[in-house]
Amino acid sequence: AQSVSQHNHHVILSEAASLELGCNYSYGGTVNLFWYVQYPGQHLQLLLKYFSGDPLVKGIKGFEAEFIKSKFSFNLRKPSVQWSDTAEYFCAVNKVGGSQGNLIFGKGTKLSVKP
Amino acid sequence: EPEVTQTPSHQVTQMGQEVILRCVPISNHLYFYWYRQILGQKVEFLVSFYNNEISEKSEIFDDQFSVERPDGSNFTLKIRSTKLEDSAMYFCASTQAMKADTQYFGPGTRLTVL
Image 1 (cartoon, each protein chain N blue to C red):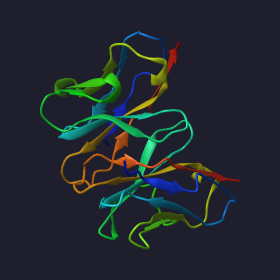
Image 2 (image 1 turned 120 degrees about the vertical axis):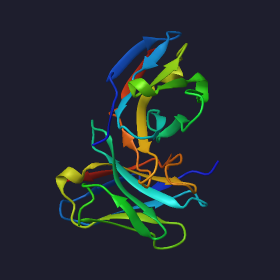
Image 3 (image 1 turned 45 degrees about the vertical axis):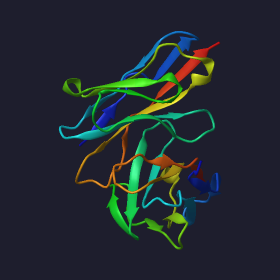
Image 4 (image 1 turned 90 degrees about the horizontal axis):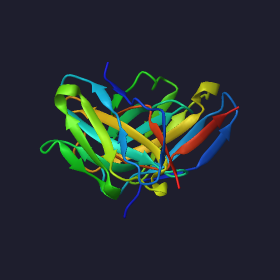
């Protein structure tokens, strides 16, 4: 069965620190990849997505992610975090073709940014 | 910007009772989904819905669950006889046209079964 692994459960950073959140998936076929963010008390919002093309994708709020097919990874990065980035971050994939697009989520990584 | 909305935001019910969770997807979207997140666990897919029928469902989506699009705007999830383990956050999502496109999520309904 397909799965998504997020390596860090809780990450604590100071403002201006760099961020990298790991995400690996297990599925041999073609996938679409997503990072969603959930700010406290709010709903899941799309940060960025990868469908095809340039494996380095840029999202909102200065986030980017790199798809490395050989490593089945889609790590999220931000060079300098802000207090307002405090949230929970979810990596998700869905299969291309054959499925109606249901997302498979990782467990999420809680990011706390200290001012 | 159009959003997916869900009501109620919090539902408390007694074990064995029926609940209906409501969602209004984005108006020009055609694919609809329900997910749930038990506290401390992953967001899990329940069911997808297209053209007035279920497209796909997970193992979680057993006979006690049903979905319906009763009119042109609402998309509902019914749990016939709730169990304690149904306590979770339930998220509705929709996509515009193509399956496997970006899914837009609602704010969720927190269901508490006592």
